[in-house]
Length: 300
Image (cartoon, rainbow, N blue to C red; front, side, top):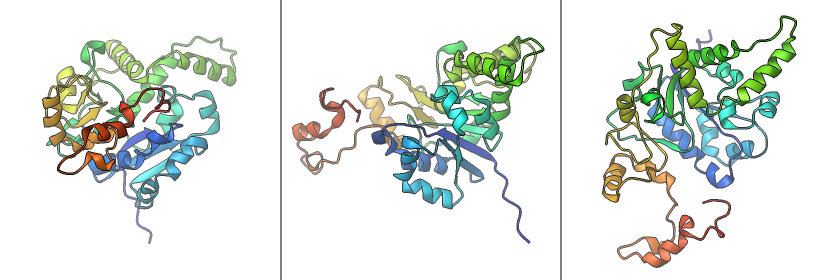
């Protein structure tokens, strides 16, 4: 008898769309970093278009294919009609089809500008009681957090979308096609997806629709992830962005906890950068990010 499939405890989901090749070269590390730091019964779910640059990003990252073979990664193709209507990540993140297709209730959203610190004393389980937690931000009194890397409930994302659609007023004679068109037009104006979801969840809570909503506050978020110029806790679980405002000494101490963060910086592979006596000027000349903007038009 065939054994029953192992239930999925949660899902880490990301959208790998039409990014430039230089950015896509970090995909294997990005996916492995997340797969290594979520519970054993979780999977990583990658949404992609299966066309063009989105497909190329998967093809040049053979490590992802091996993770698929091991059952740690699930690939989900975005239907052409959804992709034609919504071409930007923030638009797709408020698309009902996406959240309907997510494989579990508890969802870790992540992308190429976030990293999980494997040496952190904290684990994802420390934050599992929240309905939504992300890195600290100044919006909404600090409730919720940025969405780039964030832990959420799938059912609440769907409820927020349906709640906003319920505000649309159409005549009773309106067809299904007309309703869909009005929904598409409305969703185009929702803006950044993290602000959309948090604002609607708070609105629903105030209306008595979500009395037990558990949104992280700013203090909770400071333990979840570091962002911007703020590193409120040296033992954060994750990082969002390059922390550009940190003093050198603070960054140096933090990299001992989170060496994975170095993936954000230009790779130093010139021989002048190594050895007991590195040659600073020649090394600096090899770093893409230090070259004139005219030379690095396509990014680094």
